[in-house]
Image (cartoon, rainbow, N blue to C red; front, side):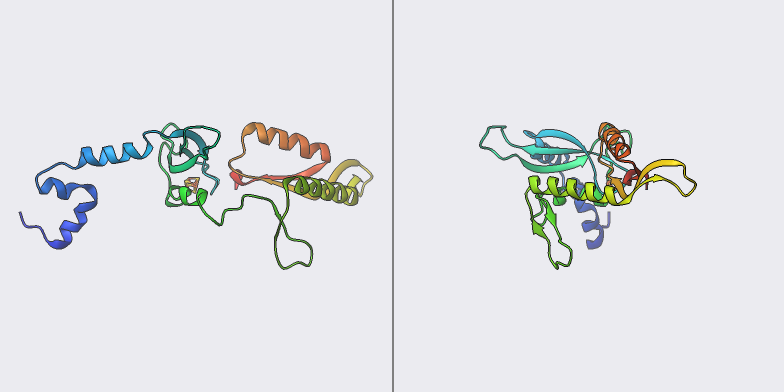
Length: 192
Ligand code: SF4
């Protein structure tokens, strides 16, 4: 059988080259994969990148001791998920690099009016500032009656946009909360 150099390198990634050389690399490859996730904790989650909302399994290494920070070591598609059945597109397959990324934001930031940069603030300060902005905006934009004198009681100055990783329960609470404020502009990325 003739095998060109180009053909040889085409088959190397699948381990077929090893077969051609007289041994089967499949068990070795299977064991290497198993070792990577052999002692991990599996956490089911949702890919946050687009509205398809594929299910993922996040593998975390750590013995759950108090002084141990769990480390994400692998992310893969969830084979039991009805949407993607274990598959991920290239973007979702790179989710691991999004989780372990030094540029990932881990705390709230705010960019003040007229400022040219973002500044870190505490969660407590973020919550209180968000609450103050909601109150101010709602007071300034609340509409009790429309042009025909009909009672509408709506807040036209605030909108809410959810994400595809939000659960049904979270979305239920969002709708209840926003409607109680009179907010009528509700949208979700999962619908886009
Ligand atoms: S894996 Fe790809 S298709 Fe699936 S939710 Fe993520 S970005 Fe969208």
